[in-house]
Every structure is written in structure tokens, then in C-alpha cells.
Image (cartoon, rainbow, N blue to C red; front, side, top):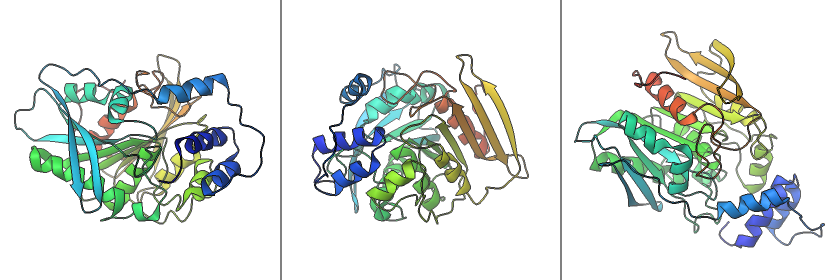
Length: 347
């Protein structure tokens, strides 16, 4: 990935979204075969232009902090931002690690998900690791590399190291550490769930893919469009909540089922409900619980939604104000799955 130019990555993105996956793979592998010029729609051009904007840091409540920090370990160095709620006085609080999607930044992702506002209301820490361009020119987490899909190595160990660093510097509840992400970040969250069940109590995967769904760039494109999901041999014991739009043109919604199927708990009897949010987004929600009634797996399919964080703020990229509030629902699930409950009511 490191040798690709910015223009190559933009062209590959355009080709992928136009359905020309073979051309995109060929471009990234080497000289591109002759093909008709790519003529993206004006709307897509505007979207790509907007992705290049540097999002302003989200507004922080008085007494709260949103600080730049750095982690350096055996497998690499990454910057991250850490949100500390204003009511923190040294008491033990939960931690949510939020993993952005391609082209995004911590500020952008925080603005789009509005997770800091929720963390201030519910009193928990939020860490936002930042992918570097030296690791991936599009700032994607390298979820499709076999070396970044295992415990104790690569990017999973870097993210685990960030969580441990926050634990060392602040008072964090060790059984209330969670990870959530969008797209490539969602795929990395699935990898963390499969490999670090002792560290992460639950995970949230929004528009992402299962651990092991791909082992290189070519198989990544195949998995994203809903084709072969690779070996996907990893299994997870970690409670998992999934959000996915059924009109997602970037990551096919079949991947939501694959994330759920990867759990050892998959196959439990579940309750399926259908509904519609006040803003008119229809959804199908499936909840699988253990014998005690505690939720273990939860899947939200958003009808008509595309590749965007549901119920977020359009101040950030890849976020839609329409639909169920994914941040709140993930937090509710995290608390219920770990034996607690948030203060707010569902919907």
C-alpha cells in the first residue's frame, strides 16, 4: 500500500464504487490495462472532496478534555485522541475504543458519531486511534492483511496497547472496555473481538467485515462486494452488535451476517423485531440472548441506508443523521452485555 500515490488510491476508489473491481485491483497491483476514462458523478466528486477536509475538533463540555496522545510499542507507533468526561475524579469508568474508517481522522469520527457527547452524558472514556498514512495511504486499518489479524502482532496489538496505556494512566474498569468501528475500523473491531476476549468485553461493528474475511487486497475487494469471505476461521466469544445498511454500495450487507456467524454464540434462539425511527428509517433488529436473558449478539439491518454511521452527525464524513442512533445503541448493548445498564431509555 505504501508505494501507491494519492491519485492511484482515489482512482481505485472511483473504480470500486463504479463496480469495476478488476480494474481497481489491477491498478493497485501494477500498470493498469487500457480502459475507458473514469467519469464519476458530480455528487461523488463532491463527496471525495469533502473527505479531504480536516474536521474541526468536536466541541467539548466545560471540564471535559479531548487531548492528543501518542502510543509507541514493539509493533509500531500511533497517535490517538482521548476524551475524558468532566465528572471524572479518579473513580473507575468504562473505556470505548473507537476505530475510524478509511480517509477519516479521530476528530472527524468523533464529530460524525457524536460519541463524545454520549460519553459526557454517561461518564466514560473514549479513545480514538489514528491510522497513519505511512501504514496505509488512505488511512485504512489493514484488516485484510493476515499479519494484522492475529493476537500479539501488528495493528491489533497496537490498538490493544493503546487501551492498556489508557488503563495505566487512568482508572478504568477492566471488565468495561469495548471497541467499535466503522468500515475498515469495524473490521478491525471484529479482529479485536476474535483475538482479545480478555481485554474487550464487547464489540460494535458498523458496516464492517468479519475477522479473516480477506488476506490481501484482491480478496478484500471480493469480500466487500459480498463474494467469498475467505477462511474466516477465527471464532469470537465476545458479545457483538452489528449495524449495516442494506443499500451499502461499499461493503455489502451480507458481511453483517458473517460477523454474527463468526461468534461461537451464533445459532441461539433470537427475537426479530421490525420498526421505524421517527425520521422514517425502517430497520430489522435481531437479538440473540443467552439462557439468563443477557444479550450476546445483536444485528440491526437499516433498510435503504448506505455506507454511513447511523443516527450520527453530518459534521463528520460517512455519517447520516437518519436512522437509529448507533452510538447510543452500541453503548446500551455494551452495558447490558457486561451486566450493567445505561441511564437512558432505548428510543
